[in-house]
Amino acid sequence: MNQSLSTQVLIVGAGPTGLTLACDLARRGVACRIIDRTPAHFAGSRGKGLQPRALEVLDDLGVLDAVMAAGAPYPSMRAHDGATVLGDHVMFERREPTPDVPYPNILLLGQWRTEEILRARLAEHGVRVELATELIGFEQDRDGVTATLARAGGTERLRAAYLIGADGGRSFVRRALGVGFEGETLEAHRALVGDVRADGLDRDRWHVWPKASGGPVALCPLPGTDRFQIMAPLPGEEAVELTVEAVQRLFEARTGRSDVRLRDASWLSLYRPNVRMVDRYRVGRVFLAGDAAHVHPATGGQGLNTGIQDAYNLGWKLGQVLAGAPEALLDTYEEERLPVARAVLGLTAKLHHQAADGKPGALRRGAETRQLDITYRGSSLARDERGGGGGAAARVLPGDRAPDAPCQDRQGAPVRLFDVFRGPHFTLLAFGAAHADTVARVNARYGPAVRARAVVRPGEPAAQRSLVDAGGHARAGYDVDGDALVLVRPDGHVGWLAAPGTPGQLDDYLRPLVAGERSPAGGA
Image (cartoon, rainbow, N blue to C red):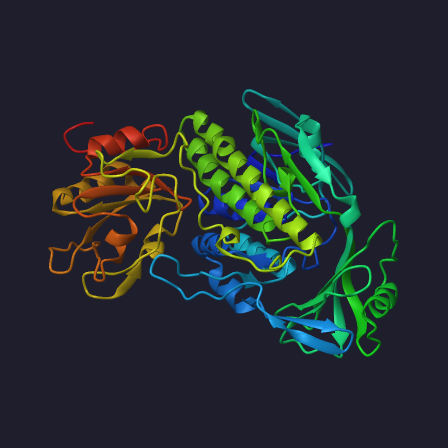
C-alpha cells in the first residue's frame, strides 16, 4: 500500500457532474483528483439533452463553443405506423435569443461527447481522469478524509480535505455514508436503450412508432456520428439479449419494418426508471452530487443537467472555503440544492407518467424544463436591501439566475454581461452616478475575488472598465431605475441587491464568503 501526497478535493466519478466540478475547481487553483472505477470512458449517448441553463454553465467554463459545434438542435419527430408516415411534430419549440437569454433552446449532444469536451478542458488545467481506480473505503475526521483507492498493482491511501461522491445512482459513497435514498424503481417501465447504426432511415428526424406493439419505439439521430439512440419499452417480464441481433428482432416485431437494418451497437443497456433522492447532501467533509444524490426518469432531459448545476453550486463554495472563507458556507450547498432536486424530481416523474399513460401533448416540452427559472430565493445567501424597491413583483430577486444583457465598452465595442461574469469571481454591477467611487474601492479591497464594473447610460462619464448600457437591457433585466448595486455570485445567481446601496452593506454581505480581502486606504 502506497501513501500518496495529499490533495484538496477527491472527486469520485467522472461523468458530467464530476467533470464539471473538477473543471470549476481546477480553474480556481484548487488541487483535485478525479477517479472512475471503469476501465474506459463511457461510450454511449445516455443523457443527450443540454438545457439552456446548462449551456450557460458550460459558457462560463469555457467550453460552449466546442459544445455548440458538436451538438445540434433537436430534430422534429416523425411518427410512423409500420411504413406509413403519420405526421411530424416538434417536441421542443424553438425560441429566439433575447437580451437576457442568449441560449434559449435545448441542444442535442450524446453524453459521451459532452464528457469528452469536459475532459479536454480539464486537461488544459493539468488534471486528468484516473480510470480503473476504485474508492473502496474512506474515513473522515475534523481535518479531512482518508480514502483508500484500489487499482491494478495494489492500493493507495490518499488524504484529502474534502471528498465528493459523484459516482452515480449506485453510489458507493452514498451507501458508505448511510444516507437515505428514498423513492421507487419503476420496474413496469423498463426499457431498452442504446446506440446503433440504422440503414434505411434518414437522419433529419427523430423517428417514432407510437402504435408499436409493446409500446413506442424511437430512433433519434445523434449529431457528429452516424448512429441513432434507440429506445424501446420492455413491458412485463419481457427479456431481451443485449446484442444488436436481438434488438433487430425486437424492432421488426414491434414496428413491422424489415427494411430498416440495425447494426454495430456501440452501447446497449437495460434501463429501469428511478425516482429517488437523498435526505442529505453533506455528511461532514463528504458531499453527494448528481445521480449519487438524485436519479430521474429520462423524460424532460433533467438528470444530467441537474447534476451539472449541483457541481456548479458546490464548486465555488469549496473554492472559497479552501481559500479561507468560513466552512459554514458549505452548509448552503444542501440548503440550496436539495429543494431544487425535490422539485425537479417531481417534474420528471410527472412527465414520465404522462408519457407512459399516453396523455395528449405528453411529448411536448415547455419552459419548465429549461432550468432557467431555478432559483435560490429564501436561501441564507439571498439578501435584498432595496429599501422597499424590491418585493415579489420584481423581475429579478436575490437567488435568481442573473440575466445576460448586451452592453458596450466606452469605445463602443460590444460586451455582454456573461462576458463579465465568466470566471471564478463575484461580479458587482454598480448602477448610477452615486457609485462613481464604489467600483475603484471594491476592486482595491477585494482584488480578483470581486470584480466591480460601473454600468452607465449613454452619454454619462465612462471609466476604462465601465459598461455602457446602450440599449437599456441591463437596467431592464435587473429592474434598476436609479442607483443600485447588484452582486452576482460565481455561479451566475444574484446574491445581493441594494438600492441605492453602500460599500459597507456589500462588505457585510461578503464577510462570510470572501477571505483575505485587502485593507482599503485609510483602514477597514
